[in-house]
Amino acid sequence: MNLFHRYSAVLGLFLTASLFALSSVYAGDQPASGDALEIEITKRGLGKQVVISQGAKEWFMLIDVTPENSVVLRQEKDRDQYLVDESETHDRPMTQGEVDAAIADYVNSVKTRTKKP
Image: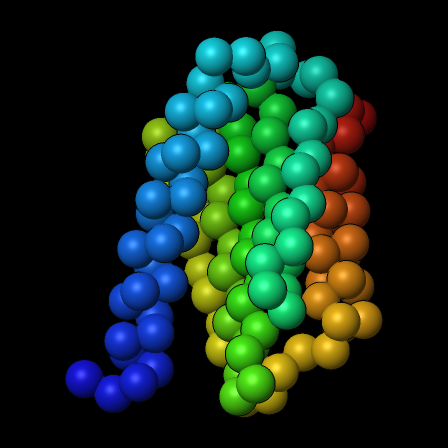
């Protein structure tokens, strides 16, 4: 198993555990559907993660930056069903400005998609 596959496997286990922990934290006090979004942005090493929740829906983005590359993970969940689960790997480290812009774009995208018509 090469380094990328090991890294991906470890990162996958971390994300699964993180999402399980986050879902149990939010399960007790979910806002009603249509309420304001709850947004939590956390710095993770050189990268960041954002968890956005609204009722039973949850959006998650993690940007993991190493000296060699950057991995961007996006997930969207409605209750226990994953609607989006994707990742991309960039062959260079993202700058802090790129990380901040990607997180801001993701938050704005979720806000736009959840607005009532």
